[in-house]
Length: 181
Image (tube, rainbow, N blue to C red):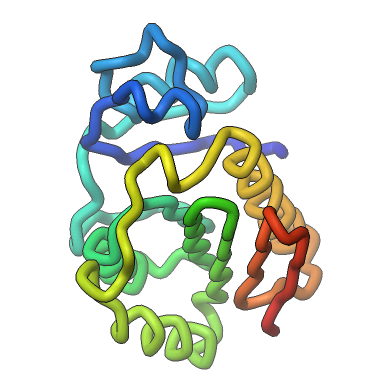
């Protein structure tokens, strides 16, 4: 997609349950996820991939136009959102997956309405208010690839200056898709 630089943040290690749902190899089990994914991506793309084997905190500086989060906790989203508000990239994409339900919030950081709308819905949530599923129930590889396709589409729309939906929801099992401007 022409991405020149990609930074991957993650302090977690690859576990057996990640093999079926994420782009990790069996040989990656026990490795830091960011470092393992850096190895994989270097085989597929002519992109500078930098692994940062730590968690994003509220004061992590981002020096980029687009920040994409794909985390499994609301607490982590709160920290990433705080860092994004401070760093002010042009766009913030918050990808969420639960089994076969994918949601993508695409926040134009130059539009206060988008920022306020996203912040208000995020502040209503806590890890206790969201049902946690075991990793093996959250998704399968094909749903992860479909999610990646939605993220790729959003980036394409941003890059070509086309309108992008604030919220896209794809119920993969029911084959239904809708978006909210």
